[in-house]
Length: 332
Ligand code: AMP
Image (cartoon, rainbow, N blue to C red):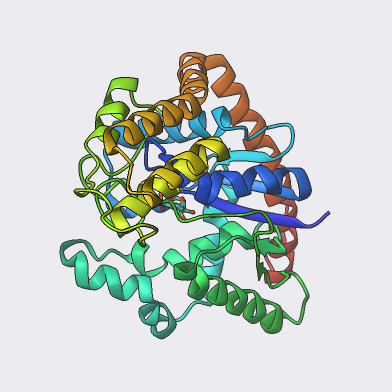
């Protein structure tokens, strides 16, 4: 079976965009691949979180991914810092990563521009750590967004360079994983880009929010004074709400409101009320699960321990090989 590796940023609460844009593909992968999903808590140190925030966010995303259906029996779900072989391989791979190529990375350039007061070495070598996350499990595939293509290319370069340097075929060069199922860009409620945590107050629909918070956000979503011509094209803000409805509602519901829009009879209040009800029906069972899992420390610790053990085994196998190749051969 082919291996796929993907990282999860410990950003705290997840929203509908995360579900339809990432988690759904993970659910597909765990059925079809030898899958490693890890919470990238070492990466997140580049932004200097407090220990409480870091731990709380790791716990939150772990509980949320489990609540959404990641199954520790089907995949390896682990916390990056639980696997010490990762920082070990990172140290070795840093010796073959060059300042010029690291400085050329688009994400590093972006950080230098936007985060002037914290341009730490971890940011510079971020692509090396990303490469290690992938190479340590000898992944065949990595699901990457457009913004991550350069990092995958660097991973391939690092793998090739190591193999060439020592004349070995240790690391396969991973390919981009192309999603077979349908992945969508979920629009936000307040801006016309994609739903995002940083999209401002009221933009994102979080799974772990109370019903009334979500209800209010949807009822407050910006609309207009209504269509004036039959079958007119929907303005972006209206189309966005229809797009969200297409994800959570019955097709007949969507069709019903689409017809009302096209005949200029739509009442946005009714439309948003229905959308809120359908969104809540969708998120509520997952929220209950999130809360149950968060309250069950034993389950969380068992899952983390099981994931760490599986990730350890795979990582240690690679590391044994790497230490031998490099020439770290024990005298004792
Ligand atoms: P983030 O924590 O924002 O980096 O997102 C984590 C994952 O969710 C990434 O794979 C994103 O591509 C995906 N994601 C985030 N927001 C959206 C969205 N509005 N629509 C689709 N996918 C999204």
